[in-house]
Image 1 (cartoon, one colour):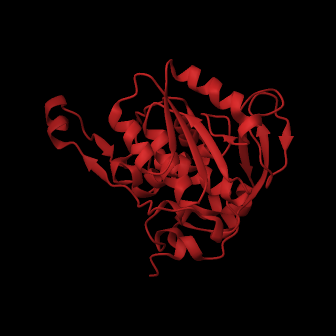
Image 2 (tube, one colour; image 1 turned 135 degrees about the vertical axis):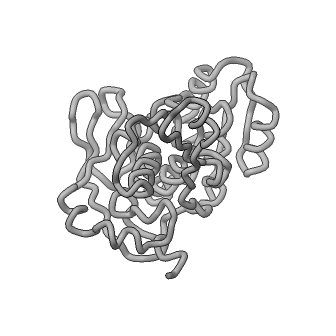
Length: 259
């Protein structure tokens, strides 16, 4: 097995269009989009029958264990545009002590700390930066409390982009330094996360950056979706009774729903 096969093989994508999550208005694929004309997030749509006819469980299982094994379910068209830092399949860990203490049949944690930048943010930002790379973006910006900014810094730097990150005043110093060490230009703002978001929005025209704020671009959701696909595959397509997920800004929970 070629461990880089998922990053180099010529595989189809089955994206048909993007759609406003509020109005249903359709938008062309393969074009750079932020929010819809209604100011709402856009969702990527696929030809699901096409996906079903192109890949089966056995073929999927034979691929190297990383996020990009699900290429047919993802929006990137050309392998050379993929921006990767080694997004391995993350393990499921049984919490046997907690199972015994609570009398639970099975409690499982998916350990996303094994991903680049040590958080599940790598899935979403890896995909979002990949699509920005495919669509010709060279300068990006986002507001962040920490982990997302680190992921954007890492993947944006990997792609050769200029990365601008704005953190609220109470962001821990370790997060600010991590973002800087990973190659971004980072500022601590005298305010809250919404103040940082205003700076990013106001700078789009003057600075020419693409706004990577939560749910203001459509592809971070697609990266987070791979966690749901991976979980289903790891559990032999028999999903847990209950999944607890840290909702945060919402991209991940939407991605899990899409999966």
